[in-house]
Image (cartoon, rainbow, N blue to C red; front, side, top):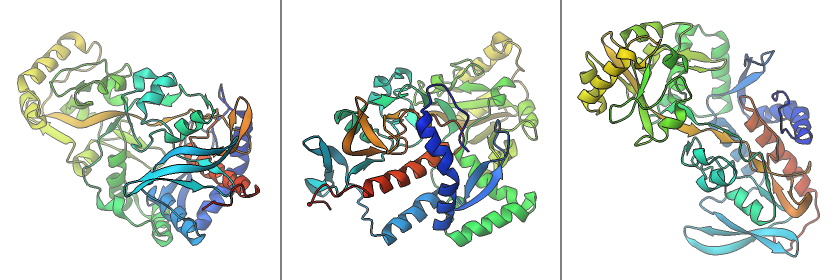
Length: 421
């Protein structure tokens, strides 16, 4: 269920979200998407989080099949460059492609903007009030903000444009996906995995969970509270690790850093309650999980100099950095002094998502000066319209609900253009 009411929240859109979530879940399950849950999701009072299996690819896989069965034409590599107006009405889009000149596509009932957020758009992050995050990389590299630019050009405006999730640190993904990530998202496969998660012993299930978990998450803040330090490619410590260091990581060259610690901390982070990473309701990853599953980001050395050489860092710089840290920079945190020495990384900082959306009404029509722009709709993050989504999966929830409803409302309108595709 959606998160509790927060300041600057859009009450009308929140009502739409809360009253349609259950039906949306049933619809997705009917398409073939398989969930496990409900699982605990603190600080929610009851278990309510549902996780898709075998991976998030299941959403696009089953939705694409559903669209194709219903005659939807999906065009790839076809960027939308402008909206086509007829008087005050939006009647289509101008598009371009790799192998075609710019051309026009006309709409039957309307145009729906569904282009994700603007976490990858430096210009929009600056314009909407978050210049410090302008150059921080997005988790979703395709979140270029194109739908916002089209909506703004048509006269729309953005609510909550300055609210963003990030920067946060994550381990860099593997260069090649592992076999767990390649599992086909068929319904039968998802059902088999869901059954296994309900019935299989942890010693059987855990290796499979770890293969996925260690590819997508970041370090727990407890690592730094217990003495780990962040080191850049020059071998220098560049931030106070217990004071929101993710922003500083984004300004290193090349926007990444390593987490360095010693054997005493490695022992501590080998069992509950000290974990390296967590996925709520699924599993916790400890030092040995990263040792087994992420050999590409796990390094160890008998001395700081040996560790530095494995990382491609000047050995003398890392040795000097750790000496200064142990001599007093660490304040009350434990020293890094017990061999062997460890490094996890690189870690990079990311903007996970942005909360701003084009202002819309309850029919998902984009508003200009409080009045709907005829023929123009926005959904998902693009049409978040002041709704704040503060919980795991709530952005997906809103994307599916708003997309279905906007499509329904748009389809019920009279045909606006005889030239429509």
